[in-house]
Image (cartoon, rainbow, N blue to C red; front, side):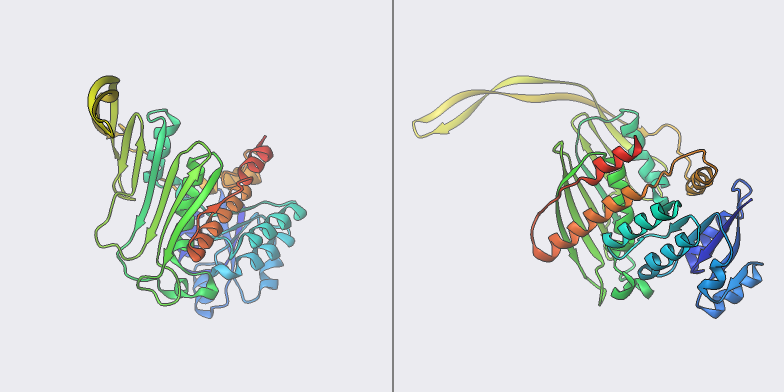
Length: 363
């Protein structure tokens, strides 16, 4: 049985990471936690876990995997300490306060001969898997715009996520998931980033962000996250030359697919107007037929524990990481470009060399 240690035993740590290791199909056991909150340590002891009051005490034991689930501004410090103690590490998201911290964790992992990854569990959300399946199976081709929205109506960012020194804000909290999904879906270089990031109802951090990305092929994508949208738009809208796909909710079992079944360009006559008067011209217009259906035929399984199964197989030398650190770094570079775009009111031209570096490492 593989051993898991957790740094920061809050709601996500207990409700997901600890709970996942209680599953019969997960060959990993949570054995110890470190937290600075005495109440959380007492609760960990009630669960039969070793409750460590100091980081040194926690790191005196060896683990197959350490999960860092503290406030965001402690991720890098705790992750590097765990790596240097000889442990593989997965941090919660957002993994860091900056791309520089991501690079520090990547280099520390390489130096120590261990892996570093991030809990990007929402690659296994059903709504995202519906969209990804449509492209993987060539159900939709030639996309020209993909829109992803996470629109909440809770009002404001709260708790430590409302504090700038903890890396709070909706864009880092949920935007990092939405951006990771988009960049995982579109495997080509980002050319430009244009963003509006605002605080609508929250005092100190952002709670609204809309980011427009353009890619090397001309494809455009939009990522929007918010906490105060009282009339929501679809979770996903995918527009292609051969059809469109809409997924309404993050909890949707299916999407609605409208697929072009027949199309042709037909010539037609039109009137145009010049300095010499009215002239006749000929142009072409698209004439098409389409069908609308539920997609996919059978609901896709949603299981965040796929990520844990991958990590166990990586530890055993059977697989490669699904959430690769180079992907994480690329995502942070795009996020930082979005912050700059919003702050300066400009479109940022991005030298997206991280995708090519990732492909090279994966060869």
